[in-house]
Each structure stands twice: as structure tokens, then as C-alpha cells.
Image (tube, rainbow, N blue to C red; front, side, top):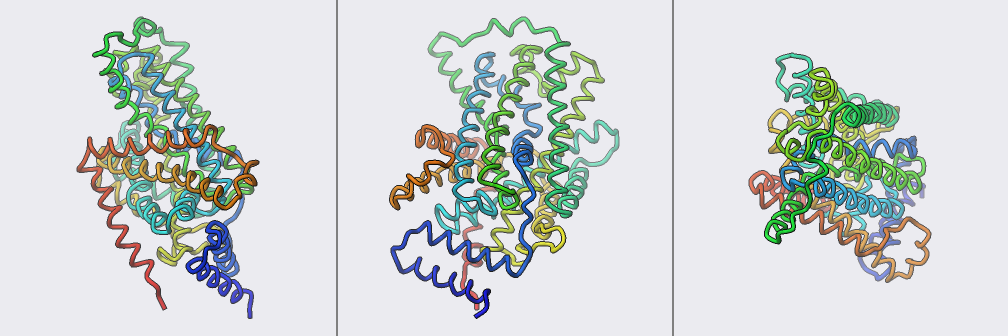
Amino acid sequence: MTAEGLVLAASAVIDRRYRRSNAPLLQIRLASVALRELNSNEKEPSLARRLGAFDATMIVMGGIIGAGIFVNPSVVARQVQTPMLVLGAWLIGGAIALIGAFVYAELAVLRPRVGGQYAYLRDAYHPMVAFLYGWTLLLVVQTGGMAGAGIIFGRYFRELSGLAVPEQVVAAIALGILTLINCFGIRAGSNVQSALMITKLGAIAMLIGVGWIMVEPAAAVATANLPSDPAVSDNVWKGLAAAMVPVLFAYGGWQTASFVSGEMRNPRRDLPRGLFIGVAGVIIVYVLVTYVCLRALGVSGLADTTTPASEVMRQALGSRGAKLIACGIAVSTVGFLSQSILTAPRVYYAMALDGVFFKAVGKLNPRTRVPVMAIGLQGVWAAIVAMTGRYEQILNYVVTIDVLFFGLTGASLLVFRARARREGTEAAEGNLVRVPWHPFTTWLFVLACWSLAISTLIRFPQNAGIGVLILGLGVLVYRFWAKPRP
């Protein structure tokens, strides 16, 4: 029998034993998946492992920092209206994001597989849960977020260039260019992403430095405090809960770095490093930007504007400063687009390898060793969403589904830990990355994500309901893909 035949036979035996015996669940699933990947790699070129810790850090930060930090401080100020709570909201959100980074880092060490979060959900629950994640990622979460960022870029491009081009058309063109770049290979896509991320950090550093040095502090910054009246305090805490929605959304995105773990030279080492350094760096950046906006504008001034970053730069440098930060925001949105196009297609590729998506999506280009069909499919759909939707509608149906699977992924760590205790392997995993104060911190992350999903669904039932409808449709589609075929 050929090597290929041995692999297929062994995989089939493992699948039968998994269904008919009480053998350890984790070992059987891992062996079956590994054998299938080995069989796939014999036939076709494998993903190129060319990314290191620096690339991982840039991907993590690029997935988090978009246009939100330039706008959301004013949204938070309108909800809580005190300096302490404005900064406190960003610190709380940062703490939750850091817990999420620890959760994903431990999962990355336990499951350093192609597709990252997709593999965690598949191995923890059921292949259908993983499929629904990939299904909504393609149709709702990733492409919706890309379309929304593309539309923001289109707005700033029109303002800066003076060209009367519809923002949706600009978004579609930007998506097409970045999609083409990523088809040339993981190194090309990563280099562009890293360059955009460094440029983005430069723009943010300019905002912080100019706002701190050149703008006189507003008088009201140091005087406001938390109200002592119980009735007023009750409203303040409700406002803080509402403020956490834009804060947690602004901190989201670190999970996409796990998608390219199959292309990292040492994912068990480099991905956790990238997660910790990247998320910690973003927390520092977000708190500093918010503080500078508070210092320059005061709470009332921050709450009254919808473009706080532009207002700070306008106070410092006039209209020239506003144009400079507009360029920075445009670069920031393009950087987010680049990161999205770089990472998410690896999920669709993993779905195709599992036999629950179009077979062509699981093919690698022999020269560039990237899933060109998966990259192109995502780019085309994101352009369609951008051409047919508005940013506000897109945002609402993206958030609900995104944080729903965030919570499910966090809960998957609880499943893996419980499974390890039953199988007596928990002690052997003690030298790996561990979430501090687990399970309390892990449950905090899970509940925070699901609370945000419920809140968005209640506040925007029509738009958020679109995402839920697509999720339900995915159950029917999975049953078609999962049917045994000759």
C-alpha cells in the first residue's frame, strides 16, 4: 500500500474508533486531523512558515487598532461624563482584552493549527460550531468589518483628495488592491501590514505628542469626579455599562492573529508573545489617546464633538493639523483592511480541508503557497457588502456575531481544561502558557462578550437580527456539506 493509502486508512480507522469506543477524545481528534493534514500535504504544497514574533505583534495590533480610537473617546464621554470613568472604561476594556489575550495564548499553545479560532471551536465542541464560525466570518464578521473600514477610508479619501467618487467605490478599489497584494504570498502581505502598522503608530504618536505639548489643558479636566448622590451614581454606572460597548468593540481583533498560526515559524512561542506585547501596547496607546483628548477638550468638549482626534489637532495646528490626522486615520483603516485580508482566508482554507466548504478554497498556489481562491472569495464578497451597505448597518450586525463567538472560544478553554483533568494530562501541561486566576478570569471574559452580544441585539434588533438570521441559515448549509458523499 502507498503512503497515501496508509494515511487514508489510518484516518478512517481513527474515525471509526472515535465513534465506537471510549478512547480519549483529545488524542483521537488530534491524530485524525493530523493524519488528514499529512495526506493533504503529500498531494499539495504546504503553507509557508515565514512569520515570527514581530510579525505576530504587528498582526495583533493591526487587527485591534482601526478608526475606532480616533472617534470612540467622544462616544464614551457622552455616556459617563466624568474624566475618571472615561479613562476607567478604557482601562476596564483593556483588562478584559488582556484576559482574552491570555485565553487565546493558551489556546494557541494547545492547538497550534491552521485556522486558529476555527480549530479551537472544532476540537472543543463539534465541527458544526466551527463551520458556523467560518460561515459567519465570511458572510458577516470579517467581510462586514472590512466593508465598514473600507467605507471610512472612502470618506477620508474623498475629503483629502477632493474627488467626487462615491465612498463605496473607493472602498471596493482599496479591497481589490490589498487582495491582490496578499495573493503574492504571506511575506508580501505581512510586509505591507507591518509597514502600515508602523505608519499608523506614527500617526497616533503625533496625535499624543502634539496634543500633550501644543494644546493648553482644559480647565475642567481635573475637577470632575464621581457623583456621591445614590440616584445619580446609579445612572453613572448604567452609563459605564453602555460605554463598554464601543470600548470592547475598539479592543476587538486580536483573535485574528491565531488564523495564521500555521504560517508561523514557531507558533507555540511567537503567537503568545505577539498577543501579550500587542494587546499591552494597544492598551497604552488607547489610554494615552483618551487622556490627551480629555486634557485638550475637557469632558464636555469631548462629548460634544464626533471627531475628537481632528479637534485636538485643529487646536494645535489649525486646518493643517486636521488634515494630517485625517491622513493618519485613512492609513489606520487601510492597515486594518490589510490585516483582515491577510488573516481570515486561512479559516476558509481550513474549512475546505475539513470537507465542509468548496474544495477549490482548500488549494494553495504552488508558487506563493497561499490560498489564493480563499483570499479572492473574501475580497469579492467584502467589496459587494461595501457597495450595498452603510457603515452603521454593517457595524451592528457584525458586533453581535463577533462577540458571540468570542465568548464561545473563551469557553472552549474551560472545555479543554476539564477534558485534561478527566484524562490526567493537566499536570503535563503545567509548563505551558496559563491564564492567570482561571476559571474566574476566563468566565469574566466569556460573560463580558456575551453581555455585549445581547446588548447589541436588544438595542438594534433589525440590523443585529440579520447576523442571527445568517447564523441560522448556516445550520442548514452545514447539513448539506456534512452529508456523506460517494
